[in-house]
Length: 323
View 1 (cartoon, one colour):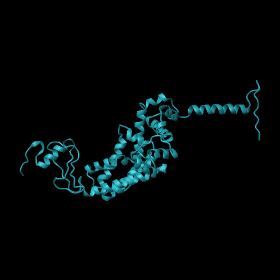
View 2 (cartoon, one colour):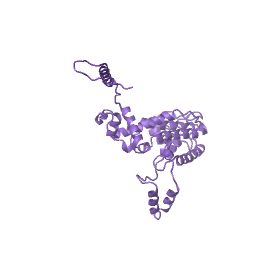
View 3 (spheres, one colour):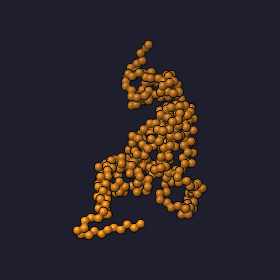
View 4 (tube, helix red, strand yellow):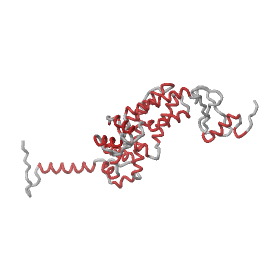
């Protein structure tokens, strides 16, 4: 069915069609003027920055590109972020909060020998988040400031280690051994940058074979052909889990063979009583008096107080009083 528009004739007034068209135009204009515009905020800016990085990599994230994503002027962003460095620090915090949200959903026992499964699940869950944002590990490595969200993640990880019977001293060693794996990624041994792929890489490796025979032999044999589970150049899921399980097995042996530790939590002032573990407190491996292998963690007075305990001196240099 054809609908013919009637022409407007001067002096004849508006036709029904013309009136309807004019009403529709006015309504559309009014609707566009009344449509609420979501105001900018720091969180909205940072979420948009994550989206830009997800789409084009961290190299694509500029203040101009971010403004385009938000439909705003670039200068208006500076009401909410100081500069690009502030944006990069901020999106590290956004990703860390996303990781915390995921690991907080894990409901797994962690006491005694169960600590290893709980820690493994936590770390692999954090890795799943990073695989959704494969640009993030570089920022986690290079950002100088540590966000509260990252500190909360590590605090939860330490809690699992403590549930498993780790002293703070051994848990400290464990974090050093895990390194970046605690957050779900491994640092690259070799970074080829923007190296080409396929036949060009093979030809380049063959040219270096005489100079680096073992390294080239390994690289020619090993292939990371699952980009969906790979972060960076060489950190694929198989390699990551192999190393993680090796570390956790070693830490579990250390947990079972490390001599008991005595922990006095918090700050310590001269004259404060020394608290000894009794099997159910801070020392999960048993109590008793401090001995040759016991360690007292007392903040700034740690070494001084250890010496006092081992020599039998009282706090402040006083001689021990007879009972």
